[in-house]
Image 1 (tube, rainbow, N blue to C red):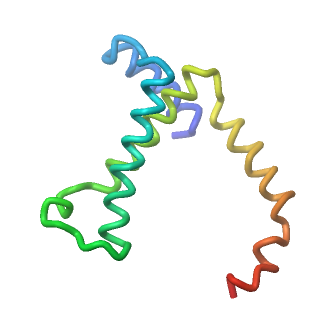
Image 2 (cartoon, one colour; image 1 turned 180 degrees about the vertical axis):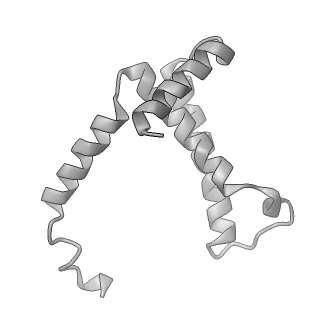
Image 3 (cartoon, rainbow, N blue to C red; image 1 turned 30 degrees about the vertical axis):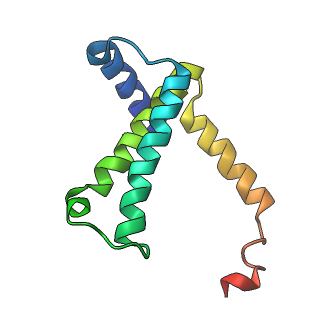
Length: 108
């Protein structure tokens, strides 16, 4: 599935099951909530925090998918084609960071 296809799938799901999109502000807050849930798993599973028994039941893959879903909702609402946006962003990064990371002694 392409990013563009995924955006269309999310749009169809919203129209078929979600009734309508929440407004952009609400979806932005929901996105932050989903990122927080993902971050909690990463901090405890891969970071220095200890993982509680209840945390072990949490699914990182599912939380990442929630983040992606809400991000695609926001993209659809605001007219952003994430395929095009990512392509332009990668080009920008490539030009800007052509040698930046290779020359960073902190990464040796």
